[in-house]
Amino acid sequence: MHSKLVRLLQRLLQRLHHARSGQALHAASTTKREQDVGFRFVISFLLALLLCTAAPTYAAPAAEPTRAKPAEPARAKPAKPLTFKEALSAELEILRNPMVMKILDRGGNIGDGKLLEVIDRAEQAGKAGVLPEVVVARLEVWRKERAIEKAYREAPWVHGPARVALKGPVFLQVPKGFKYLAPEAVEMLPHDFKSPSFRALLSNDDDTFAAFIHVSETGHFAPEQLTLNADSILRRIQDKFTDPLRNAKGFMDVQYGIVAKPEWIDPPHYDKEHHVVSWSHTEPRPTSPRMYAVRLGKTWAAEFQVISPGDSDTEAPIKRAQKVAAAIEFSPGEDYDDADTRTTKAAFSMIDLIGGPAFKYTPLLAQQPSTWESIKPHLYRFSPILLLVLAAILRATRARKEE
Image (cartoon, one colour):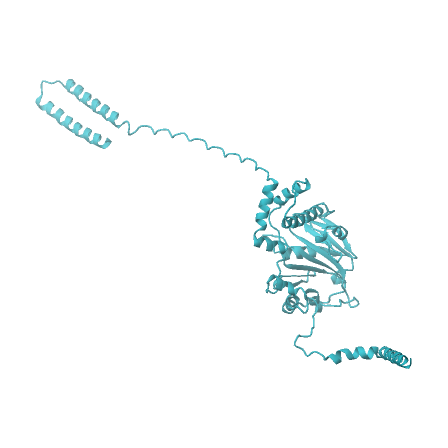
């Protein structure tokens, strides 16, 4: 529309120009002033018409529509607390799953315990009535776990940095961010932390890493005793799980349907600078990997058995075990380098410590001794007594005949 008006204006101006020229030649009676007035009037009229027509095109942009403020999200109403019936129904529904029962039978855990907490409160208040046996068993396990957690939190931990005496000339420099529990306090924890040996416990503050500490006087491990053959050690470890004649635990693998053999996660490694031997391997059962680190002294050794390796994006679990083992200190004159030719040697090698002693057994297909060969030594041993008994029997028989 605008372009058409511009072209129309140009044409009118051209025609007015020609008309003005013609008037100057043929209209001699018209004065110059009247011609100028007429020309200006026409130009003013056309410009006004053009501006009025094109005004909508150049109008100021319309104001943007005001945006409505986003509505604030509705605040979530607090969840209604579960009733006893709802918690019991939900727990029974979970326990009906066969896979859940398999996990629980193998010592696993399911859920966060909120359902069991509601059921426990109802039972303590006498409002639960008679519970199903499967829920009663699950509730007993949950209560034991709660008791363990409470005892663990309230135990007399020694937080690092601190230096604690372990046993004999052995000390532990507890690193910052870790905590130490003495063997006496460990023995006071529930049964899950107890063990036949007298061991301390080391954990980090967020309880993602934990290790038992066992200190013993082993004798000095000479350099030739620290030669580590990973393949031969692994074969010894695998024999414990795959040979039922050697270890009855081998039958547990058959029970769980597991045929995998232990494999190295971190093969045995000896750190000559800190005198730390470390290793870790898998287990065919659904448990945590076995991980150890041993700090060697002159005749003493401190063994760390990692029971919870923890998760870290910056370092491997075995590295953390090596660091805490390197924090072991000895009294002056009792470190590894203080040993000499008169120092008592260890009665076994590091291979025996890691993989266990070599075991010799009689194969099932071996030739078995005869029955006579089996009882002959016992007959020789008790023959005098047997002869006396036989003589007494004969004498009693003759006496009866004479009567």
